Amino acid sequence: MTTTLAGGRAARRQTMRRIRPRRSPAVPLLLAVWAGAAGVLWLWWRNTPAISDDTGRILGAGRITGLLAGYLMALVVLQMARVPALERRVGSDRVARWHAMTGRYTLCLLVAHVVLIMWGYALQSGRGLGGIAAQTVDSVQRLPDMGKAAAGTGLLVLIGLLSAGPVRRRIPYDAWYHVHLLTYAAVFLTFWHQLTTGNDFAVEPVAKTVWYALYGSVSALVLWYRVLTPLRLNLRHRMRVEAVVEETPGIVSVLIGGRRLHRMGAEAGQFFRWRFLAPGMRFSSHPYSLSAAPRPEMLRITVKAIGDHSSRLRELRPGTRVWAEGPYGALTAQRRSRGKVLLVAGASASPRCGPCSRRCRRRRRHHPALPGHQHPGPGPVGRAGRHRRRARGPADVRGQQPRRGTAGHLRGDPGPQDPGHRPPRRVPVRAARLRAVGLRGTARRGVPARRIHHESFEM
Image (cartoon, rainbow, N blue to C red; front, side, top):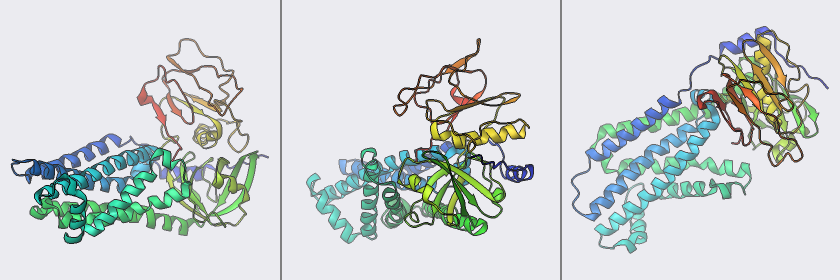
């Protein structure tokens, strides 16, 4: 069965008005983060008197770890606020990695803060190191907002333990996701004691104002982009399932209808978090990529059945309401340069060939074997599209002879799920930029790192 979803020129122009190629702001953002950390250190240093004994040193270490933990806690929430400047220009997978790394640092600093502060208070009370537990109970009962802080700390430790790799792989995604949402409650509970018991904010009113502004702005971004923006998008576009098309055994395309969908600012290759309001799927939200450029009344996702949620997509009935959040993702045709090589593998060929096909249509070239027309079978390398001054259609990498005199080569390594396939030949790469998705063990020989655009779909 052949399904053509290529939008007209008017639809593509509407989409491109909302999308402009820009440089990634990752470096300026990281510099801003380090500048904020330097400001926190300066605040601590300014309000730290001369230390003459071990108790003062322990309390000073507890104060700086607490300040840094509070600062990073705001960044953890900001990184998952789904701000378009981060999701579309930095990349959702990169922001998710930042979130995971920042969360680990925050949890370590938080535990160190609790231990050091309680140890210092115990030494001041003459209890010694063994009296930390008793001092903790006494502080929770006497100091303002410490009860809420203890509850928030317990929630953060629980979330951190459940997010550890060995534990995370053994629990369902939906259970982990809903427990992870408790981070907002934990941050709210731990915020207030920072201002009521923190010496640095008690003696520096300006610092307290800046802290309020930091947490207030992060809360506003979360409210706008996690609640109000998805609500407005879904009320405006009214999306429903139009049809479910089985492309090959185990792979289905879900056609989603709605109103003025081409004005969502989405491109083929970007993804939404989809919630299908069908029995048993209402409380599950999963990321799936668009496998074709948006049309005014139609979107398409192509999904391989690899889990409970993706396996149930074939059971969707026309008319099922759809709740979506997005678009997210930075690996689109706008990552352009003088030339490109697009390499995809397995089911990832569907969303990745979407930018390739749109680019070919813009150059008025015919593009054979678009996703939804023919699906590449499982293999080490599914499709490769090579674009220089003239666009060309995708070609199967296996059996392709390498050119002589090229600057570098890439070799795809067949994964454990592909037994019996012969290894693909080398793919020549000269000055083209590489966009690689789903390739395991790819040897990036002769290709500078700045010319490789990679986006992972493991959320």
